[in-house]
Length: 436
Image (tube, rainbow, N blue to C red; front, side, top):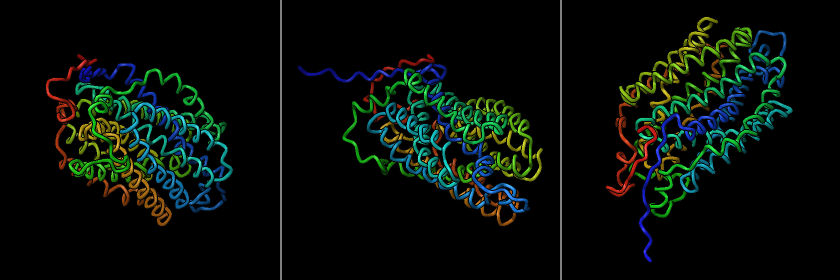
């Protein structure tokens, strides 16, 4: 008997469906695990370093700017391991890789609470970093594949919101209870999302688009570097954007709470209120970015918000508490508005067979950019003994990268199958759209 041809029926979900919400919660778990090192950086430096009665940055903080920058750079550099992990999802499926990387990554992050020295802390946290980076990248891939053109930007915005909530929780908890918990107590709290993962797994499904691609695909190439020549120009542009974005966002986000607590001596309650206010501006940014990406287009939205993000980062470190709060809050708005545009266009520019691998290369470029930015920012801050000069010299060049968006095609308003018609035989596709 001749088997019937595979029926390509795509069950596409609305961005409010529990399948997409489950992915957002998974991203929140990754954010909670990854951002703890930033939120608790002041406590890490104080508890694992040596504070003295002096005027140098090392005396005041406990560790030198160079040591902190190098440690953070090594943690970011470890995320290079996320490339083969994300690439494996193009061969073995999105769901098992997502759940596996999150489980192991959160476990290693939990163990960082027991680090005896600063460099042990860096080493343990660095082992978990690529796993959490891979898990977070896969939530974005899966959200794009689970939704139609009507919901894609909204789904990406929801994933970003999930990560932001997880990251914000660590900042709020440490700001309000840092003196009680310390960095060790904060990392012990990672056990909460870790225990909840088996329950969350019930909401997460393998995307039908991946199943369809698997049923019609030719034999796979090696995972590492599995992006064919026709897609490499767009990948190079996306990777360059990711590099400059992370060269700016890496140090801007990583030093902000240390800067507030140890340099400006901002009260913990003020920092907590700043983070709570950032939740409002972040939500407003996601809503604005989602609307702009769907109505104005991915390219202009991405270019404008990337430039705004860089300028806000420079203001944040300009030297006063008011500038810190204003720059941070407006920067959160700009970064949140940027996320739906870059997330949507990145997933839309590549076919299903290589989409996860392309995201992996984008993550690698972002890692290299963050490492470069952290090293440059830390060394300049040490050399000039201030953060404002380091911010101007590190973030200024990244603003110019926004022009690269105009080298990409506009993908707004199209289904993935319209962008990549060769993936599906003509006339055989039936959409079951959750937003219809």
